[in-house]
Length: 55
Image 1 (cartoon, rainbow, N blue to C red):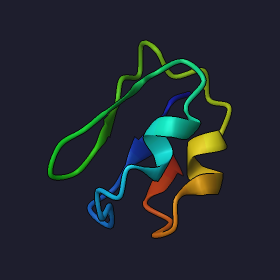
Image 2: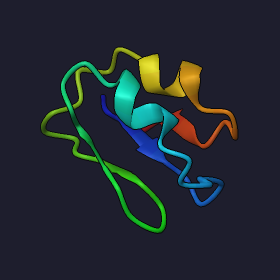
Image 3: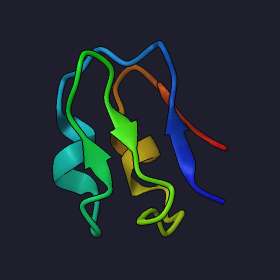
Image 4: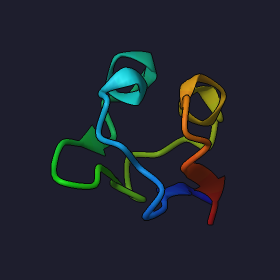
């Protein structure tokens, strides 16, 4: 099960550098590619706005 980034995302970029498989893409609200996500939760732990949740 991949993680998803909710509308609470503030596009700070913290999660991108934490993702070990480079599954996160930049944008107004960032997104996680479910095909690449290994569900490690590292991005969710790093997110200052708690915008990343399990899908």
